[in-house]
Image 1 (cartoon, one colour):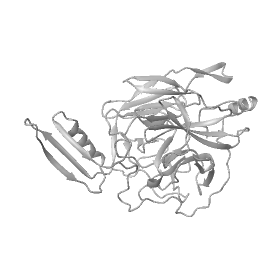
Image 2: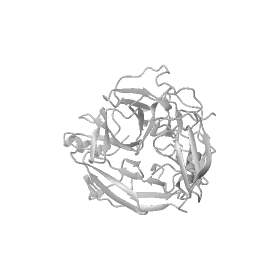
Image 3: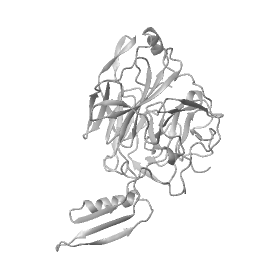
Image 4: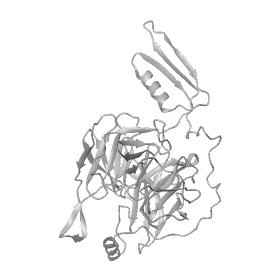
Length: 420
């Protein structure tokens, strides 16, 4: 078995193996590769690319490098296998919170990398919502966290057209919400996911038709935090969004990953296909996964982003010096030419220049994307000859109770969850 190409699709299944089936995005066929230690029940991919794995020990795994791990406190067996997993920031940044969100109960698990010796379990209460129709005599239930994303160190969840909720660790979990000014005018049903990209927060909405049989449109909105408004996004900065059921939404440079620019990739595991929708006009192409096993959960396996911060940089020259008592600065100057400033070097420089006894200067031009060192040029999306099926598929399966209620209300109801 070879190295796992990323991004790719992982399908959790029960077809005679405890390992997820991996599928190529370009070829739409199975990949003869696996991620060591990853099974259908012990792994939680994150939008940042790292995969949380609970084996004999617990760690964050780089899916493309089995030797690159970040060890964590051992995760309790009680944690649900279908939790959403999100990192507050890149895992090398001090104070990074690893968060797990239970899919059914109002429970979260969390730990701070390098600080906590065990996972903390927290049962939250952020209000109630009606149960229509009542279940077991109850007409209300606690509001659960649905779609969630990390942006600038905070967690944003339950994005709606009129509000969005916020989770911060100070250090205990603290919940709040933001009321949206000039809420979007929307009637109908939608599956909503939140995505962080380049330190910006986006909301992806899959809108259902009147009869809840098809996804009739895909829209993307960007949060303007200064105005507390959702603004229509005509593009997403040359990135591709990759979304899946169970809370997952991520962003990657389309050029670096060989994906279509300014498009949303969505997995529909139960029907063994994925869609690619253009942000500009919602035009959608459907791609079948050839000979895919029966599955109800699809995940994105993504390359990790190892550069600190949200803007990549190309280094031309670095100077780090120490100021003496006479006021003169002595130090060393290094020329990096066209090399890339990686995490380890950046941390050393940050530590050096942040010291009170040190003065430093870093000289570099800013660029939007980091070239992959092993490639002479970025892969071009569309080089593989594929013949997309230009049609819409059935919408994600909705619980019959919700379908019945939506039909009764003639579609004038908004669903803020993901059902596939």
